[in-house]
Image 1 (cartoon, helix red, strand yellow):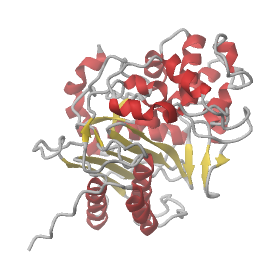
Image 2 (tube, helix red, strand yellow; image 1 turned 180 degrees about the vertical axis):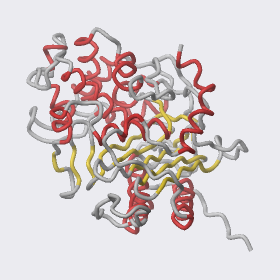
Image 3 (cartoon, one colour; image 1 turned 90 degrees about the horizontal axis):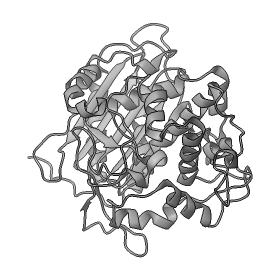
Length: 420
């Protein structure tokens, strides 16, 4: 099996990162300038990643920035375990949490392009025995307008205290459907991982293939994402070389107990499945995020549908079909016990940012702020070639994102004393 040789391809992945060449998903984006970003910029980004590792109380951090007009920077910071000595490397894999959702929604849109489903099909057409989802369409599941609640609110603590339990998708979906609703179908936006679980179940029935096979045939294979997989529920360790995953479990009031950091490296991906179960790495997430931004996997019609955004927060914050839009950047952020990450790309300039940390305590908002901070730093780098397309003005500043990172980090590690 191709997944059994992950360790053998790790070196090739590292070489791909170092070469800074265009990825299979980057078709339609500006060509990448094949050089490192200026030393001053790279140093600032490295310092930012080190700060993120400390604020998250993580042992390892990973980040990559690809600015087609100026160059690239990729880095791995720290060690694979707390107080360990094995250094983290850029090719290592990690759980990507809700960054799985844009993958699931892209599979939906690919099946629409193939004529196997319609975007406005009723969910009950493909899940005829499911109670409590009447009137919900496949589109509404990806737009987070189904009104169905997030199962995370019901099961989140159990995921942390019993991470190796294997969860059937129907059980996750049922817990979400049974919880108080956000509203009627199509009425209002409400973030819910239950939507992606229901969609995964529907797509399996519509295609006759498992979710893992759909991801492989529709996304990972075509994009040559060799390090990426939706593991079976029984696979409790992260495939490939990886850092351990940590979290500070919250108390009864929901506040993390910072003094206790729990190793949750052994975990069933079934708690996330098509909403959060995928494992990937920097290089593959760069490839997917660029494909997502460029629309290179979809027809023009489906790409346009995916980009239709509902304002969610500030005027520059929108949510499309499984895709978050932050100003010009398209992508997502996610968290699953042990890991938090984010991935964004600009379809106009090609600017791409991917980050990950191996402590999920700060949550997805922390990874998102880190990615936005790195994007802000990159946006100030001048073009190496006259006339090259640069990222447009971002509606946030580096200082704002630095403050957002600190606000989102409840359990920062102590700062090391300055060397004399």
